[in-house]
Length: 467
Image (cartoon, rainbow, N blue to C red; front, side, top):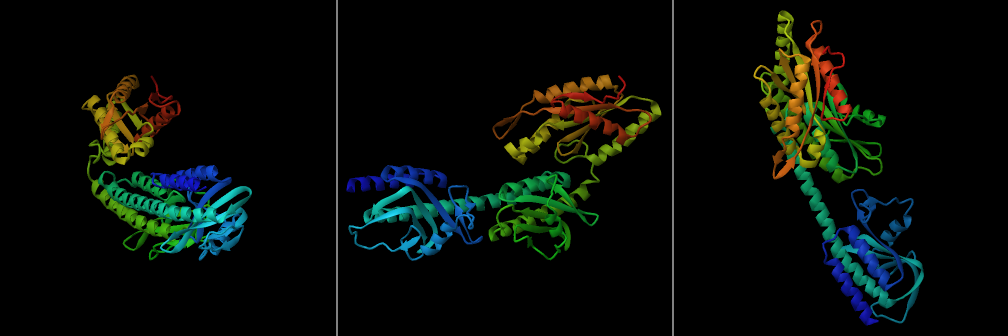
């Protein structure tokens, strides 16, 4: 019997010295216990003081519903100052191992940290099983060893969260280095927050004409979120409503509300830690958005896009007006081209936004290199480019478009020892004497939509264009 116990303890030590996560730890312990005794399952629960709940470590740290699993909460309360909870009763283990046996169906053992219980291990048996004091002493040793291992795992998880938090703060701060358009940077901020606060739904609102407009994601169907927005004031760092399941975090500038980040939980309350992180991330987002606003006011008088060195949107609109006037006066042909990088969001998600910026730069470079000096390429916004082709009919524009499309497809982009291949979709339209510039590009944009809907990496011509 002693040899069997020693072998069991030796195997336990081997498991606890491995680099495993909590799920693997639970599975490994279960395998060993099945070999040693007729056990059905082993589960590990840790108490979360911020939400006053028990969390199932092996199941993505999910909160345990007290109404469904009251036995777990009861065992956690009863085990303080005791060694075990056996069949719903708390026991203190005698120092002397006597010839005593007990029939048990379930066994709870404490997880100790700094002489305080911070979790429990639940061992469940298929049927009522006869165990002796030697087994309980063995389980006490097991619980002590698992306690140390679990403390390390929890510490590592918290350290990982802290690192991810500081990375998120830095990434939000860095956005302004290459982007200044709110329509582009706000979704990026939303995605960063959503990845970090993955347990809750994140919404980003900006205030326009004294009303909150949802800018990320595309929809919010919970009226309680909009009711919460009505209650926020500029002096608030956060506002919790709906039993702490909705949190509003105002974006402010010079004492005025410019927007709001909202976190909504479908299950748990927002913990104090979640609120603290979101308050800090919102402050950083406010700074970044305010800088972007200030920066855009400066750049609106510039002519070039800072990232791609193509014409910016404002300069493009000026050139469009000039070319439309010239085409009407002289009767010269003029074509418009709308270009979109296919699946650009996936590039950002897979390789990061720095790599995404490099893709934009290189794609812009390829486009510019293959155009004539008289052509007018511009960065229209985000991953979209607009090109004016003066003195060009639609059939000629199609040849140019296919040349651009093939060149981008054949130009892999190397970023940090990674090769990224991208393609473009394109819409073309030829100017009509009776229309204005906006109408021309609406038709080009409609053709671009058709190119994307029909499979991407292709050139489509406005169907109403005359060949």
